Amino acid sequence: MADEKDDFPELDGQLVDRLNALTEEEAAQRATALRAGLEDYDLEDDDLDILESATEDPDAIVYLPALPVLAIVGRPNVGKSALVNRILGRREAVVQDTPGVTRDRVNYKAEWADRRFTIVDTGGWEPDAKGINASVAAQAEVAVDLADAVLFVVDATVGATATDEHVVRMLRGSKKPVILVANKVDDARQESDAAVLWNLGLGEPWPVSALHGRGVADLLDKVLEVLPETSAVAKREVGGPRRVALLGRPNVGKSSLLNKTAGEERVVVNELAGTTRDPVDEQIELGGKVWQFVDTAGIRRRVNLAQGADFYATLRTSAALEKAEVAVVLIDVSEVISVQDLKIIDLVLESGRALVLAFNKWDLLDDDRRRYLEREIEQDLSHVSWAPRVNISAKTGRHMEKLVPALELALESWDKRIPTGKFNALLAELTAEHPHPVRGGKQPRILFGTQAASRPPTFVLFTTGFLDPQYRRFITRRLREIFGFEGSPINVNMRVRERRKR
Image (cartoon, rainbow, N blue to C red; front, side, top):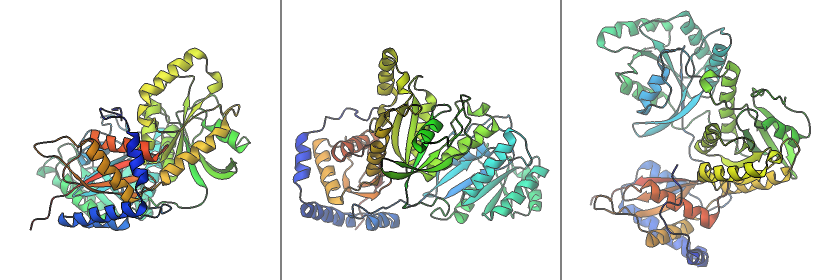
């Protein structure tokens, strides 16, 4: 990942002084004038929704609408992952001829006809299956439970099997909208194979070829008809104890940490990696406050070789993160920071949750390892240098008291709101200090900016052209340098708008 600093100058202390000298009234007047200027541009309905929902109340909690969720289920090797890749327009999900290669429940963001939604790609569903297949089956059921609508994929060349009949019964019990997809219909001669699937009683089969793309556009048009605008299942919880997800690869010390904070043997601790299967919710008093801790099963490095229970646990990890507000990612300092550690951190960033990095087993650290560790942190974790770090020993309880201030700092940043006037004053200073490069003979301008949501802080820029990712990182870095945001991801989104034709 590119270093956030890029080639932009260091922060000018006078910039901070100028922003601090700006009165609330002056900032509000500036924001009002810039907002009025947007009337000269073609704005869409959702632009107006964002502008109207923006609030100056620093304590207001505004969430962007939760994206609707589409689960893709079916027995092994019917082409679910190939269909996911076709919908996304890129190769993301693992595709292999071996049945049951998909072990994880994997979420992807997709877009069709200017509408965004989340896809959940599931493993193959097998009724009464043992071992891995039993977990894949359970995982598909959970995915359906967490979805707004379901694509049920059947191999049209094979026809409906006894397994498919079991799936149909499960889907009917879910009471969710179901679209029956007849995959592997590569040409018109195979349409009759799809027609036979009317017998499943799920309505019209939609013939597609995930491999060649045939029929997928029509299928997606149908998907948008049944998906709600806002998810009915991905609801936000507000109030009550702040919710903390403990994440980390197997045997990193999550259960030990939960036991130490709870002051009892709440969770089985075993040297055998991955002994925790389901998340265990536990209300814990720490630092004079009550917290809702969720201990999650470890995420294995070789997912495709994972035992069934581990695979199901990975799903539950994702579900726990969805429910959490802040994630504590435990990293074992006695081992090299691994690709797996980085993937878990990326999972947190994608979820938009606040982040605290807990370097566990600190009592085992010698001077040599400490030097290597600092180098690894500098190289591998530079993209989350904003996350609070605590060095702890979950086993002995060393420095556990540092965990609460780190959690509170991360959550305060996650909740933070920047007044619209102050944000636009910052944008004006930044563009004067370092204008966006000219692209194709034109220089994109930022017309107006507002914080559309908190949890996580989400800023929307109305612009006359596309801003380079490097320039958006520059804005994000300045936001952090001036307003803090330690422990929280920041989203900076763009809306490119053209001047209204007279």
